[in-house]
Length: 83
Image (cartoon, rainbow, N blue to C red; front, side, top):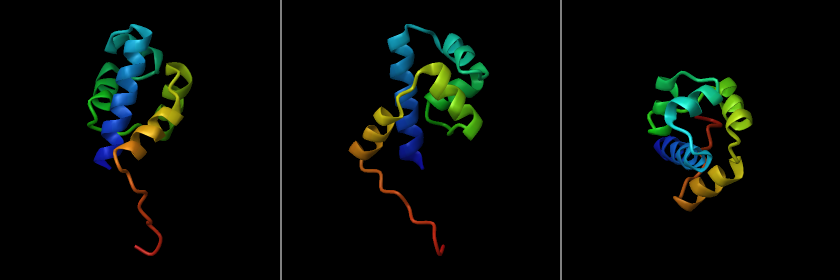
């Protein structure tokens, strides 16, 4: 789970820099409180599904880049069936 948090935060950070926004403005754009956004960007948490949709649409996040990043760092999906 830490890999996912770290990679999602990195994806957010680079998109924010690309947009030339500070964290507060990016949070506003993604319909999040500044604290929520900062925790996401710093890899302290993952977004709820609703927040994820807002981030993807309003923040212009490319999920393919996020997926490429988690594969690059060695993320292996966990099989939760039967656990």
